[in-house]
Image (tube, rainbow, N blue to C red; front, top):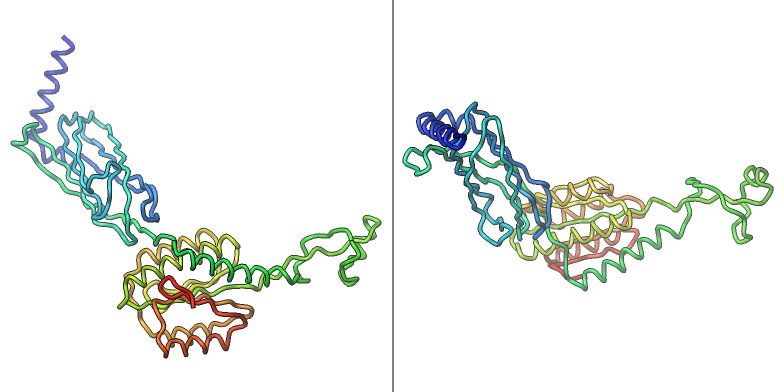
Length: 336
């Protein structure tokens, strides 16, 4: 008896759905989100979509077809399109998760969802399409060039030595027992009187050391520029590990970033790199002049460029003459 009632109810709902298909579609809502807005190439991303039945009747037939941005690879290796069918009770929803990844740097958008309802055979089908407008940014991958990594490690090692070899007497972070090797001027007589033994000031090291990461953008050499973006990511991540503040300066659509460090600082720059269309706006010589105008004390420079001609080498030498330290240069995955 209960089974017959259920079948009857389903038949009535099916009839209503066929007759009132446009009304049904108006009462179906679609929500979606990515679990991240910034990812690296090949990283697994979760796309979550929800179909909501706001109607007061069950919807016996919903055919959902989702088309994710071009370039998406679904978890099972298929293309960016997939579909499924639903039965939804009144005021209920269905959530669907899809694992996907993108292999190349860039901005991915313009997906679409198709909601189809009507009869099961499709004779009275009505379709509604909904744009998926959320942007997903894929950052450059890390540089795998061992020569670049090795050279960068040595250069940043020199910066760390300069950073920690001199104490800043203004930055006192505590006291320690006098060993006889510290200068007499470092003895804190007030602290020594409190503990009845000689104590010296424990000063922090100088925080004046900083780096400018400089990117020259040449839109005529796209592959070399992709290598340069990978080097920028590697450089900035290594600076983050060492907690060295860095400013980012470019002559293209990546823009500039004020000095700083931290997760937000790095993610902002990675987002700009991911969105870049490799457009350069002015010359390498003008970029070097901008670096000179923004010069700070004890600043080191890491210059990244697709290549260097004779005129650009002269501009680089001009920056070197103004710099307090050696300028590190990467060109298309190589170091000069």
